Length: 183
Image (cartoon, rainbow, N blue to C red; front, side, top):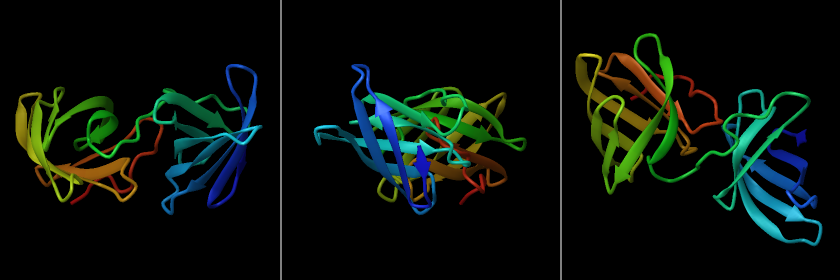
C-alpha cells in the first residue's frame, strides 16, 4: 500500500485470487477516503474507507456491502474490517462520553428524524439536514440533555452532555474526533 497526502494506492487479491488495484482520494481532514477498486480488465467498483490517525490501517466497504480493509507494513488488520459509511445516524458508532471520555460501541437507531440509543436511554431529533442531534439521555441514575453534530466528513461527530461533558464518536475503524467536546 502506497500512501501520499491526498491518495492511497494498493493491490488487493479477491477471494478468487484475482488481483485488483485500489486507488482512493483522501478527504482534507485525512479521515475518509473514496475511490475505486479496479480489476485487471478495467471493471470498477466504488470503495469507501476510514483511515486511522497514522494512516497505516483502513476499514470500509466495496459497493457499501462487501467488507474491505487494508494495512501498511506488518501490522494487524483493523477490527472490524467492515464499517458503514452512511448519511444518517443509524448503525454502529464507537463513542467516547462523560468526564473520563469512557469509550464503547453503541448502536443508533433512526426512524425519520427520531434517533434512539438504547444503552444511554437516549431519544432525540435531528435538525440542520440531519447533521445535528439533540435530545435527552438517562444512564447510571443520571440524566440530562445531549447535543451532537456530525463533522463535515459525515463519519465523526462531537458534542456534549449537559453542556459540561464530552460526547463524540466515529464509525468503526476511524479515529476519535479531536476535540471530542463540541457545540
